[in-house]
Image 1: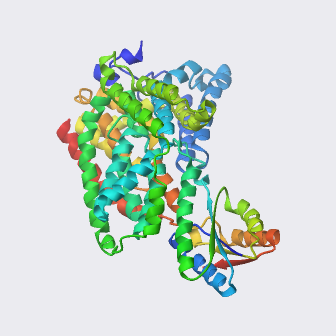
Image 2 (image 1 turned 90 degrees about the horizontal axis):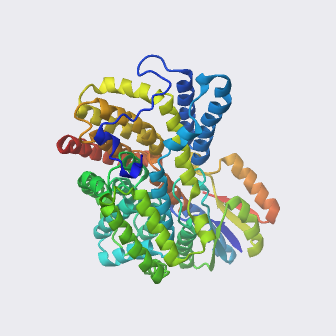
Image 3 (image 1 turned 90 degrees about the vertical axis):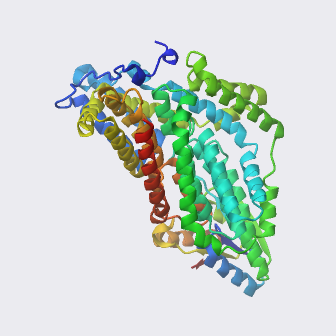
Length: 465
Length: 139
């Protein structure tokens, strides 16, 4: 079946569980136990950075495949996932979407447009620090919704640190709210951050449908963060009386010129085409977003004609291998029935109540995402969300459990430093400027914002669905 | 030449002040060194499309300009150096290049530091023997 032409499984009410080796209830088989053990090892290695994320996911996938072919030859009970099943477990739409957007972003980032935009916002604020903060936060939120959030943080945070220092304010005042807004903004679209992409692609929803479901709550959460930021930083910013160092601000202005106008114009034109493509994709046999992003990137490469060997180096293949490895590891848990076993137990707790199941999914996802890496969690939680959606009456029509998963994984990432990749990257950037942001200091803002936004998300889920 | 390896920011204030004071007393030029180290991203599979070292270098230039402004206000002649890599590998080479007679480094800041005291002592010994310069730990 052509997945691009298929309706989402949750809309059709189709079973999506292979459930090959294990019964729905009762004891887990040996393959299910081993696959769960491998997944937990991968999960710990990723969450606590014991190993490079890509290496951990690849090792996990390799272990499951080798065990299937070598161990499974003598003992069929050890077969976890075959090569064909592994390939089927990979969501290639996600891989193509990330690859396409990465190529686009790699070209766009070289034009210095983010720095240019941020400095223009500073100039437009005419020295009003609150106007500057709000406009920078909105810039972060909007760009995180449309482009990769880690890249946005890598480009905006160093500049924000410099801007804060030039204006005589503490860098945390700009950087922490930027990270919080970036995680929230990423939930607005299918391409904003990995949990959104993974869930959106899995349920086969269009860009516009996804936006219609998420944009209102993302706007509400953004407004809530602006209020929280005002409340937390108002006294600190009152003390910022100087208008900033003119020498330093001039240095920032000089560093903020657009590097290659022609490339920028081409990138903007293609970016708009990609957006239009996302919007119109469901008019063309439900064209997957991965096809739109990949085609846009191919067109941009043809127009800009970058050094291809350099371009290949700049596309971050480790990310793609990370996702492929992770999909295979979770696929192994699915084929052995380990996830189905877990899902049936969660279904018992949720009962036959879609609202309760959605809220449970949201808050459990948020707590998990605050403690461990949200990408592997989301991939592992998807089959559970499938099961709950298919078995709980009232859940399949609205997709409420999937929305709970997206909101929980994205918003929960704000609670702690470890919650999401943008947090970790921003902490590293701050440390490079001599500001070591502690776990406790980040959590002071992060937990408040997480609780408020999750409360808003819970109300949204109950009212909207 | 006095060489001060610093990141800027609140943690470096004491180190920069000590180096500035020393340069003033001795009438020497103060070289402010920032090393853009992107190794904090080494274990992440996040999409890294940006030339991180370029962005960090820009930030380093800015931070060193700030530090230089402050030292010059105290009447010290300065020079800023920004490099990409790992400080412990680059420092001896840069000290040689600049002909540094004294190197000022920040003391480890407890649990939050990248070095513990033992590692720092070892590093100081290494730098001292590799460059022949006096190494001062500030803070």
